Structures are given as C-alpha cells and as structure tokens.
Amino acid sequence: MQAGTRAQHKSRRARAENIAGWLWSSPWILGFFIWTLGPMIYSLYLSFTKYSISSAPSWIGWSNFQHALSGADSLFWPSLIRTFTWAVIVVPLSLSGSLLTAILLNQRLKGTPIFRTLFFLPSLTPSVALALLWQWLFQPDFGPINYLLSKAGMVHTPLWLSSQYTAMPSLMIMTLWGAIGGGTMIIFLAGLQGVPSELYEAANMDGAGSLSRFFHVTLPMITPTIFFNLVIGIIGALRTFATAFVATNGGPHYATWFYILHLYNTAFQSFDMGYASALAWIFFVIVIFFTTINVRLSRHWVYYEGEAR
Image (cartoon, rainbow, N blue to C red):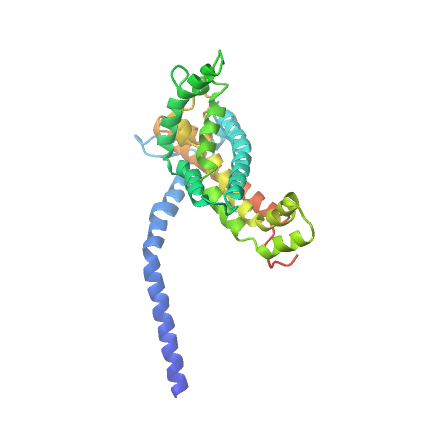
C-alpha cells in the first residue's frame, strides 16, 4: 500500500511539474505562434498572390517566383550575386581576423582585460551610428581619412562611398571594423580557453613549436567553435542591410544594392507585398540550403571531443 501511495504521489508531482513547465513556457510558445510562425505562414500565402496593401490579395500562383528567377526583375540576380560576393569576402576576413584577435587576447599578458574591452567596444556601436560615423570618415572632400592621405602626399584621394568602384570595399571596412572584435571574437576566445592545457604540455614535450601547436592542437580543438561562427557569419553576411541602407542606400549606381535591400524596397517603397514575400521565401530557402551544406560538410572536419571516429 505504501509503495502504491508513493508511486501515485510521484506521478501527481511529475504531472504538476509538467503543467508548471508548460505554463511557464506558454508566453514564449504563444509569442512564437502569433508573432513568428503565424506571419511566416501568411507570408507564404502572400508569396503566391498579387498584393499591394491598397487592395485585397489576388491569387496568381507561381508568377512572383517566375518573375524573380526568370530575370524579369532586373535587380534580382545582380543583388543576389552582389550579396554572395559580399559573403565570400567578408566572412573569411571576419572569421580569420576575429580568431587572430582572440589568440592575441588569450596570451594572459598584463593589461589583457583592458585590451579585450577596447577591441570589443566598436561592436557595441549601433549599425546606424556606425554607418553615420564612417560616412563622415569617408567623406571625400573634408573627411579625416582623405585629409590624412592628402597630408601623406596622395594627390588623388579615393571617393570611398561616393564611387561605384570603392563603395563596396568601403562598406567592408566599416563592417569588419565592428565585427572583428565583436561577438565572434568573444566566442573564439571562449573556445580557446576551453582547450585542455594538458594537450599543449604534451605537444611541448614532443618538441612542437608555436605554429605546430596551433595547427595540430588549437585548430582541431576549436573546430566546433569555427563551425558555429561560420554558420552564423554566413547567415549574417547574406542578410546584410543596415550599413548599406544608411550609408549608400544601395548606390552609387546600385553598387551596394544587396538582396535584403532589394526586398525592403520592394515591400516598403513599392508596396508590392506579394512579390516581397516571394523574395523573402527565396532567401529563406537559400539560407536553409547553405546551412544544410555546412552541417553535412562539418562531419568531415569538425572534431568533437569524446566523439568516436
């Protein structure tokens, strides 16, 4: 009898804990269904309609997707290729720069906390403020950068954001300035500090030098961190928007007209919400595609400690 009573008591307590867990989770669950999943499903419906806010959606099937993929939208493919180009350049530079910075700040030297703070501060600058700051720095006529270059003897200083040839490299400089010492660097720093010191001691005993320890101990042990930062970095690069929107608004001559900027202008300038929804779902598929490829390829190069090989 006592055993049966005890079992019933445990069952009631487990049931009460489950109910309490669902109740505590319910605000997030409701928020997810109302503000995330619901709008996503509705936008999927809108992607098959012609909808411009002023009139009710009318079903047109796959026409929005055909309009984009067939090249009828003259800005679709150029903006997508430009975004891929941006990601191919910015992601490797950001990851390598952040890793190098993390290694330098992981040396346990005197004053390291101060240097970590100084490196991290630029990443705290809001993207709009960052764009406005660099607009002033890159100003061709009276900007500080061109002033210093002219004082150094350069006769023809760059036009930076005002030229279609230098606008994208200028945006890359802006982005890397805020990204290299930011969250990616912090994650790398945490990964480096998680490498067991015994491995370095064993490598030292075997006569391994600094480079050998880095390539044979550090890199393999932080591959999960590299993989995480790579996936997040690619998604972040593909959805770049704020700096281009504020600093150049896609110009000059569409030199910085990225995919998300094209989506934004389609939705909130042209008010073609049906076509904008189709662009959003195309972007969603692209992100899922690249993320899936990264996950599959990670099986061949990411090392998880304790995992059987």
